[in-house]
Length: 337
Image 1 (cartoon, rainbow, N blue to C red):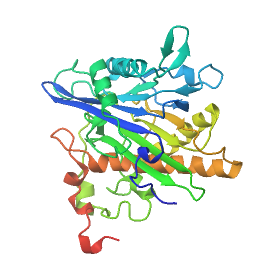
Image 2: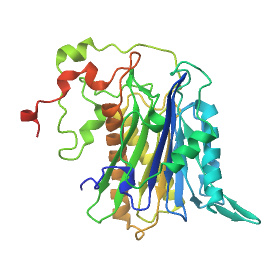
Image 3: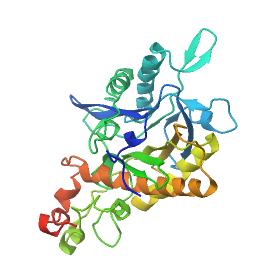
């Protein structure tokens, strides 16, 4: 198994990702849009946090009508931010993309939010339809950024700066499995035995080669500021293997295992942890053994995506960057594998 060319969600052929954010003037928030190929992607969802903010998730129940979605929106702004999906729907409808009904189409755009209210100064400075449209317009098959972009702009992870992270894996069969996570967790993203990022343990050879365990002094000195807040980690795990709606839901569920490996505790009463599973159906239906490989990779890529999100996030006074707190975790060049 190896990472795809970009080590990103966009390594799944046909998937595009767009970010838009606003910082300043009371804002520190943003929106991320995941766009499948024009015909849409088969989709499932698994919601495990106790405080979710979501839209269109009931449609993804295998018992319900719609098989494919035309975009997924991940956004800041808590429940207010769900309006960003309206801008994405407008763009899709203008392009004639959606579920066909008499007189036109209805784009299917499941969405989930993180809680970042007030992190730029103004409580109601949240994403709206315009920011969703901007993220749609920015969507690219080459988007591979990690850190404080899009929906992760105002994110905080266990007292550290959080953000967007992405990772991919190409299996021996040629199937690609990839994830994008927006990490805004109440729990810690650190290994409990020290200050190493927990998700980095699942990295592929050389992926986190510049990281090592931080010094015991730095690990013992770290005391995250305790604040009363809502949080949430949300994301997408996708593959080009042909999965059913129910199997996409299972892929999302297994990705939560990856979330729980990288964040401790996960799925708390103040998190709305939600993961969408997507299949572009570009390759053949996997065998039973191949499906197990896809599911296992789904957990691993999500863990890795969480680590990339925190490692690349930009620090600020109330949420320092990981390497600002643990500078000794950055290995000298001569010690890197």
